[in-house]
Length: 169
Length: 167
View (cartoon, rainbow over the protein chains, first blue to last red):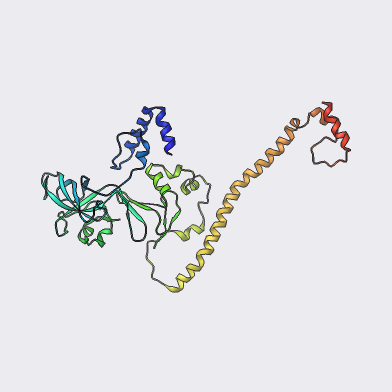
């Protein structure tokens, strides 16, 4: 598979450019694709890792923030996984909200692109990295949660988020 | 415990295998192994990928409609546990799967039997038309013994050796 695409790239970078843009146009996936499309094997084998310092996450509640950058993943040296709590800095916020840009907030990771193992042996992975802002006690700041959430949150005692969720994966 | 079907290849996913991908519109895709998962990430349509069940069913290679499929249909209504029923079901499952397997095999044999008949007629036609590649037609006409090998004629070995040299 990789060999076939490498041979294609050698025939003409314009061909691969066209291939790359058509693929990007079709998908609605908010994936971080590399701009350098000559190495098309990177495009297909994207290695997903933990949520660490510097990771930008989407905020999926109505607390006012839109994007949050992780500044610390609590409880792990490697980084946060699905269901963990992170400390983040609000990078982008809606004009009238409970949270403003530049605030330091706690958040619970509700969707992670890195797969997480479940106790029955299967793995789950989501489409993007998303977070729900909480206060120090673990209660959500917003009143609604958008998108699917995993039921790993029940074990981590984030029951309120599960109650607000519209779909539990 | 529930045995799921792989979204890509339609094989059963046993517990402990595979990856579940949850899309943001809350649709869950289950894959039995990384082969199917990677094909999905490449945005391949399983109906166009030859080795998947979806392709085979679509193109009539495998059986599509049969009464044995009714047993495997997903029923969302929970059933109260009934011991006698459960025992009966557990006894019936291997029988049903055996019947299903024989029916599927028969479907494939029936589909391939047309090719067998075609190949035989082709071979017969080729034998009749292209026998000249083996022996010249003039030679065949001369000696009645030099027909298609099926005829058993007692001929001395010396005579058969001489006649091809006449060409």
